[in-house]
Length: 281
Length: 299
Image (cartoon, rainbow over all chains, first blue to last red; front, side, top):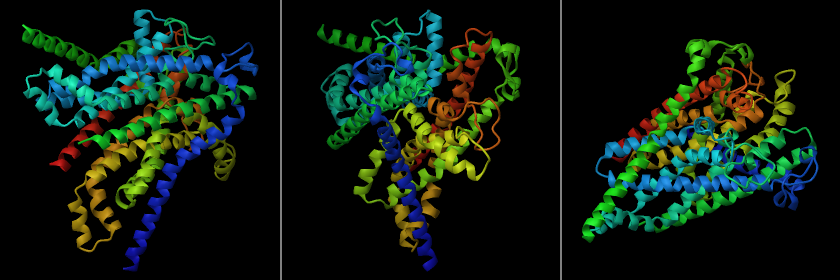
């Protein structure tokens, strides 16, 4: 009996320790980034573009990269939504009866979701070569759109499935067409759409491997779709590789900026999901 | 008349949606075909077998042996799974079976936050924390010298990156296990741990397998975080303190010069194709297992 109790105690302790390691690693990472980044943080970082001699430690900031990332993540999310909302509706409302077909489509998006961003980057690069697009804001947006489509479709699909069947049935039985029903459903899932947007934006703003080949890099503010654009994660990556201490410090500060942005996005989406599931019938 | 317009509208929109759906689903094939098409030049010169087993990487001489990179990927992935799997399984069991609802409500969001952190931040953290830790505190106990940039560093960083993936799948699987199963075991006098050991783990094992397969495929494709801490040395690692050079890092590091050397871009696209195929198969496998499990548990 004592042996059994001891065994239970032993494994329970192990489980608690494992949980501490897993959740604690979040604090360890964020703590490290904050403690390293804060000393190098200043207003110039977020209000200025790189000046002359930026990469040997002279003054400037990463505003160009921040704006570039916002453009790419924003553009990709908008494009992605235009494609994903119809897809999610189609899976749920139009091929509702055929479970096999909708399961295959869902499997395809699960698989696309699992494909690493470096492959999307390489494929985006192929598309660009094919159409003769140079590394540019446009190229980055294309690659990141491919990356976020599965995220958007999966999230929207999940959200639409939480809408009670009765609502759809009631609308349909009143004589509404499937599209008119879809509009009712879309109104119901508005917070869910917002969650999907946040998730997609968060993924898009933080990803490097997809923009590495496609967006290029530039010290100037992006002014047109055909110009190369800097992105925040790539700016972190490049600056960290520098032997100059000042520049490395800026990498830490840039990492801090990115971390804060992404944390805000993730917390917001968490809150939304919670709120959304509270209203679920 | 109005009726007709409404039905027509519904039909047109339906066709439009079908086009969008087919286009995005076919992405799976288009990516595969596109990458294969671009790898044909290098496949003409060297066979699959040569590419996969040769360890000479000399692009200038037209030698493309992916063996060191494949080994680099395998080392890093294996280390990350060895670290992440037990920790994640124990965490999921704790969260679902032991933790108070309040504790759960506090802890689960942190696991989700962890999954939201961008790869490059993991990389920066790896360089700042894990690499010095290995160099100064871990490696000296085992080997004479290590810079810290090693497959172990890559494995540890990756392990933390795949925690949320495994934990979220497993907590879902564990919560859907029927309560009666646990009750029956507890009723005949088993302790909670014995119930976990003999009933829950056995019933959830397909879920554990599926989560692991998914985690492996995630680890395979992770690029930037691994690239930053792995050392990127194109030799086969012999110990966990040796640097490694995983496939995704190879693609990411060489994109700049690939256009100037013949066949180089084709070889890198072959690397992307390789990743794509492996990850595709692993993903399908784990999704099928998960779907089967779900059907079994809900009916």
